[in-house]
Each structure stands twice: as structure tokens, then as C-alpha cells.
Amino acid sequence: MTEGVGKKMLYLASDHAAFGLKGELEKELDAMGVKYDDLGVHGGGRKADYPEFVGKAASKVSANPKSDRAIVMCGTGMGACIAANKYPHVRAALIYNDGTAALAREHNDANIACFGGREQDGRDVKRWVRIFLQTPFSGDERHVRRIAQIEESERNARR
Ligand code: RB5
Image (cartoon, rainbow, N blue to C red; front, side, top):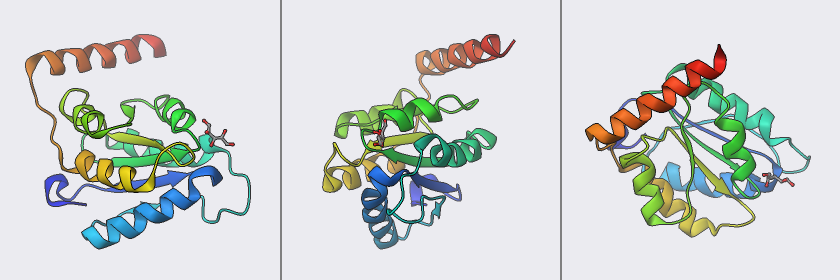
């Protein structure tokens, strides 16, 4: 992980549609000296259902939501984001420009970033990942309050 993220774990997961993007990101993270755990899919040759692979990363982050991060990818980023957000304490954000890469962290304290291998340019995604990993949560009272409200909704939905 980067300096800004400390000793936290970073997980990567994608389906077949974002297998190429995942590989591009791995090269970028290697160049940055960021350690990560690739949870698959491990090969672009077969159709891989995104809930399966995204679920592997989301369940890791769900167990350590304050420290761990994941980058999950599918063709559009949308299915990956929907699937990730089913896991308790996960706040997965679909990122689509520099501003949302920063705001997902500053306002939403997002612990998972979602991208689309068929809809987004790899160079953009690499830049957004850097921003996402290096931007801290603002800690502003209004954002802390809203995140607590989301957690409350999650508890109520599980009852
Ligand atoms: C796979 O064809 C595609 O549906 C999937 O990658 C994703 O875009 C779904 O949201």
C-alpha cells in the first residue's frame, strides 16, 4: 500500500471483462511499490461471474472495514459496485473522474473503489486509483454523522 494508507491490505478482484484492466493496474501498483492481493479472476479466458470474485474482496474488506481497501472491476463497474455494497461495512464507490476519486474518500470514507474495464480508459483508472489510495477521509462531523446513518440503516435491514 502507499505511504498514505500505511500497513493496510489492498485486494484486487475482477471478472473476465476487466481482467485486462486488473493486469494494467497491477503493473502500476508494482511501479508504485504498493503491495496487493489479487483474488482473481486468474485468467481472462473464461466467463467469470463478477459477484463471485468481487465477493472475495468485499468479504475481506467487510472483516476489516477501517483498514483494508479493495479495487473491484467488471465491464461497467456497476455490477461490481452493487455486489460489493451487499457486504456489511463496505462502502464501495463507482469512480469516474478525479473529483469522485477524491470525494469518495473525503466525504464517503469509501473502502472499495469500482471501475469498468469496458467503459473506462486504463490511464484514467490508474490516476484515479492513486488519488483514491492517497486521499484521507476528511473526518468532518457531517460526514461522520452520515456514515453512522448508513451503518444504522444496515443494522436495521439485517433485523
Ligand atoms: C459481463 O459481460 C458484464 O455484464 C459485467 O462485467 C458487468 O459489466 C456487469 O455489471
